[in-house]
Image (cartoon, rainbow, N blue to C red):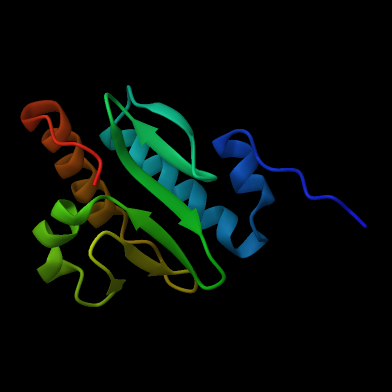
Length: 124
């Protein structure tokens, strides 16, 4: 039996993802880094996360999509633009077979960074 090693860094997480997801994960990370260049990068609950004083956002690869977890307030704030994506109260799913809406992701990330830095918003 081959034992799968748990990733310890975001890069290891991306490298352990299926090939089809790796490009989208790297694109997602670039969008989030652009909005939060001084954020600490780590894994939270086994998924990539960027944080300042609290978690800003988490993202993850799944079989058919990449999920972004930007908090319920961010999902609500962009609800009109997210109507073409599957969402829940705190999650946005971007299909692997379609280009990521990088500009939209960047704006959502900027919104979340402002909420944390200017308003002291917390994670969930």
